[in-house]
Structures are given as C-alpha cells and as structure tokens.
Image (cartoon, rainbow, N blue to C red; front, side, top):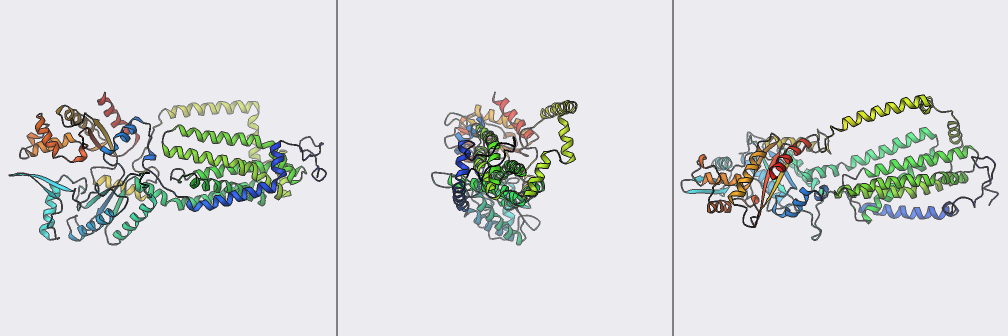
Length: 598
C-alpha cells in the first residue's frame, strides 16, 4: 500500500507520500472513504424523503419585533384592539355606480363566499350586506338606525334609491363605499394563528382560492382589487415557482463560470452536485426540525449553494494543481484536504456565526432565517470540505485541465489578472489604499442620509407595477381608510374610558394627528362622542362638541360601536389611517404621538 501511493510531495519535490501521514481526521476520512460515501448517500436519501413535507408559509406576528415597546403594548392589549390582519377586497361595478341590482347580487354572493372561509373572523367581516354595516340618523322622533341594505330589499328601483340614501347618511363613503360610489369594499379580518387550537392560516392556499374567486368574477365583468398582509404573503408564495426557475438558472450560470475557469467537466459537475447535496440536506432538515420555509428565507438556499460553489472551487483548484505536478488523484485529494480543511472550516464557522448574530434581532422571521442559514453553512462543512475531496479522490480531474491550472499558477494568466496583481506593488498599492479611503469617506457621508424603513408605497417585496401594488394604490385612492393604520392605545382605569378629561386629551391628540398631511383619516371614541352629541340635538352642528356632563358621556358611549373601546372601558384605541408606511410617514406620526404623550 505504501509503494502504490508513493509520489513526490508537491512542495518540496523530494519526500514520498506516506498514507499514514496527515492528521487523525484525514486518515479516518480517507482510509474509510467508501463508508463515508455510503453514509452521505443515506443522509441525502433521508433528506430528500423529507422534501414533500416542506411547506412555505408566513405568519403575521412573526413579522414584528416582539421586544419593541410598541409591539409589547400591542401584544398585551391585542384582544382589545382592531384586528390588523385584514384583507380588503374592492369590487367595481360595471355600470355608472354600485346602485345596480345585478351588481349588488354579485356582491352579496361574494360576501357569502368569503364568510364561508375557515380563516375568516365572521363577526368582524363587513360589507354592504352584513348586519354590522348600518346607518344612523336623526329624525323628529330621535335617533333612527338600520342596516344599509333595507330588510325588504328586492332589487326594485325604490329599494336601490333607499340604499343610496342609507349609504349617504351612514358615514360609510370612503370606508366600504368608494368616494365616487363606483365600487364597494369588503373588509375581511382573519383569525389569528392559535397553536393550542392547532390553527394556522395557510396563506398559499388562501391566496389560491382568492385568485380563483377573482378570475370567476372578473369573467362576469366585475373587476376586483385585493390588498392586505395575507395577499402579500400569498403572492410571495405563489412566486416560488419563478424563484425555483431562478435557482435553476443560477446553477447553470455558476456551473458555466466554473467550467470556463477549469475546463474540466467532471470536476465541475462534482462541485455542483456537492453544493446541491448541501441544499437538499438543509431543506430536508427544516420539516424535521419543525420549520416552514417562509417567503423571506426562501433565498437562503441560493446563499448556501453559492458558498458551496465558492469553497468547492478552491478544493478543486488545489487538486488540479497537485495532479498537474504528477500526484495521483487520491494523493492530490489528501494534500488539498490537508492544506485547506482547517482554513475552510474556519471560514464556514465564521459564516455560521455571522448568520447566528442575526438571532439577537427579536423578529421571529429574522431569527428563523438566521437559524436556517447557519444550519445550511454548517452542512457545507460535511458536503464541501469532506464529501467533495473524497469524491474527487475517486473521480479525479482532467489531465489537460490540471496542466492548464498549473500553468496559470506559474504566471501564465490572463492579462487582466496580471494587471490586478501589480496593484500589490508599493506605489500602486499606496494609490489603491488612498482611493479606497476616499471611497470609504464618501460612503460614510452618504450613509448619514440613510433612511430606515420602506421608501415607497405598497409592498416593497413586490415590484412597483405588480398586481398587488396596483390594487393597493387603487384602494387607497378610492377609499379614505387605508390599510396602513397607526394606533395609539390609551389606557385608563376600568370604567373610566368615557370621562371628559380622558376624551378631551384623546380629542386633542386626534386633532394633531389629523392635521398631518400623511394622515388621511382618524377614528376614536372622542370623535364619535362629538358626532352623537350633535345627533342628540337634532343634528345641529353647534353641538358638535364633547359634553362635560358625565351622565351624557356615559349615555353616548353606550350607543357607540364597541370597536372604539373595550368591554371593560379601560382601553381607547385612536386609529390614524396613513397614506403609506414609508419611513418619513411613520416617523412623523410617531414623533407627534410621543411628544403628546410626554
């Protein structure tokens, strides 16, 4: 055995190779190569068998920083606050306006279909046809109220006229009826995920059903626009097929670049295969560990594959140079393993720790991304630092490619690389350092103007001209209450939410927020008190004021919608509907609220 592997050391050119040399790890791996390959094949088969169990999904609460003071308050009082995970579905009438019997029939049918969804909070769903869509008016006999669609509605012209009157006095224009009254909106709150009830929204399946409904109604001449967190996640999941095509394209491009460098088909194929094995191991481990592949970590396999190709190219290049010096393929593989294993291990461990640092960001979706990425990089230690050299010790590299690699190492390189190499000369190196220093100063100056947050309206994860962003822009244009809501949570002792002192302060803050250009509308119990106070006085606008009498305040509060305060009258949500969620927009409303709170 010693004689069959004997050769010259690639660096000193004199010492024969001893198979008993090298570290204990090297001897263990290469002396039992066939066993290592069998073990890797078994692990690959097990990981591949887990792939059908891998699902892509999202979660609303995983997207928010759970340790932020604002989010801590929200999680503490979320049962007393409006549901933020709401789908908004706008349905446009094909005629002049929504007061058309055929259109209203389609709207009713659509409402009934959405009510039947298991993910929907049926009590909170609101459209023209739901009982919670009501009008309220002042008559000679006092307050009068009723559902927007009259109980005796039969689609007759007088019924349509009555509906128009009800809508105009309901205050729902800009909410569930567009400003131009050419479209109606259905607000669809979704049930929160609940581990105890084993309830989790499948956003991919929900999006598929929504698109089926949209296609069916648009075929009938009724356009639909849909916005909301669930739709964003659903569109991202629906785009996974395109992402898979990009992944295939990245494999082809990386393989082509590597082959252009090595001109060795078999070794290039081995590097690609080992990098793909790492991706299979990573994806197969996710369902076994209880993870879903959320839309924001779906690019991690690209990253693992790219790192695998990088380290694999280094191993292959080292083996090529050793083969070019005359070493047998197994000896060349062992020399390369000996030289690069520790350095490669250190590099991959640094990568894993770098991703692991993201765990300090208390946003569950980022923490999952960090764990998935760290897992993938850790897997590369086995697939690219161990499996690849062992496979190359069996298959080897092309002799012509090995000779070409050795010539390149001895200086017969491309003129571009030769020019770049001269940058290490003292004079050129000094100029390069000065130039990079100026770039660093310029970059620092630019970084002072860096904004944190979204810079454009709509969903930044999608293109500006995507169907979702166009739908979202349409809904924001046609309706006054956008999906971007800023909620100030006012806490009081139990039963004290309707005191004059509290409502006066809420009213003052509401006025400050409403005066901001980025705020489209505001809703609070204080504003409702003003409206009802005027109604109690024959609708006279002179009475559009907060009453100071506690009995009157309590009476008006008892007639107000429960969404404006909680059951124990201890939480008052003040909601400001924003034009968008850009960084400047959020900064302005947060600043006003924080200064007022002080």
